[in-house]
Amino acid sequence: MFENLSKPRTYQKEIKLYTGTSNPALAQRIADILHLELQGLKLEKFANGEIYARFLESVRGDEVFFIQSIVGQNINDALMETLIVADAANRASAERFTAVIPHYGYARQDRKASSREPITARLVANLLEAAGVDRVITLDLHSGQIQGFFDIPVTHLTALYQFGDYFKQKPFDWGNTVVVSPDMGRAKVAKKLSDYLGCEVAIAHKSRPKHNAAEVMGIIGDIVGKTCIINDDMIDTAGTLVGSITKLKEMGAGNIYVSATHGIFSGEAIQRLESSPIVECVVTDAIPCEVANTPGSKIKQISIAGALALCIYNVYTDHPVSESSYGNSEM
Image (cartoon, rainbow, N blue to C red; front, side, top):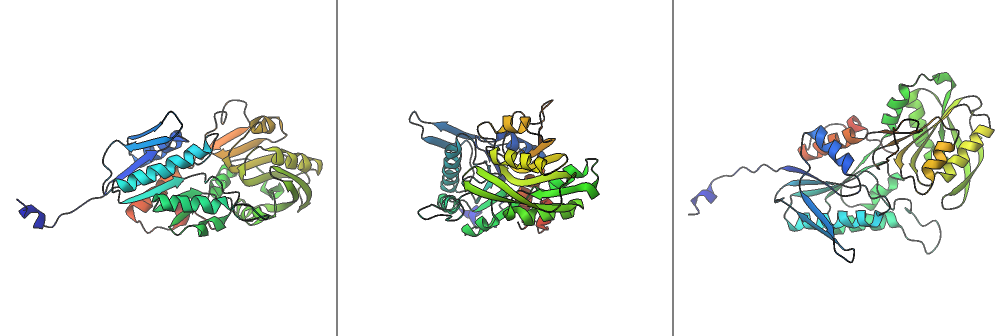
């Protein structure tokens, strides 16, 4: 009865995509590009708020990709969903579990700026590894050093060149356009974007007395009468950003455009941006935004589903292509 077990057997690992609750629309776009179906995953809550997760089919020996942005009003639920699903996949004998995290939550606390502070970016990395995550795919981390917090592979993508392609379609006079770094820390990224667009770069010098507050003290570079493109990794309350925009206008800037990978848009952020003197604010769909691309709105959204889909394909097939093919860049 066991004679067939002695014969060589060929196993084909299967790729399976699952989504959490934070951004199912992005997960569906990725699945459509890969010509795959989002698989069944039951996510519920007990009466006391505890999260329950169960795969609705076998994942034994499969390559599992779980797509979840750790962000939103229920950010802690999004994080716990990711950890619980990873644990479920490992206990169900999945071959490998990859967490696709377009927005990596808790990334802003990546060092001890003052005594008695946590380093939450490292804490989340430890939690993901402890839950059994084998690889992380993420997009425009708050700082590149966060990759070093992991002992598992991290694929760090950037939307920088997608923003570049978006602005290249605009009828700008590139000799009269400047990419503005919102602070000294983003100067290197701003220089990459300006080189890609073939224009100048300027750097805003700011003081930051507290969280979600900053004041522009001066500008390194010429912005007078020029079209300005402010590039950042995230927009939270937009209070600091709108203050910077107002200051740039006072200093003689021309039309102002804003691009940011992660449009968190907490509180009255969208109202602040809509009433500000910007022409457009362009974000990715790493985080859902209901008003984006609606008539009359200054909030525009571009999709990073294609880059994430190609990355997932390359990870699944171990395809030895250059990471630059899907927009990866050392930040």
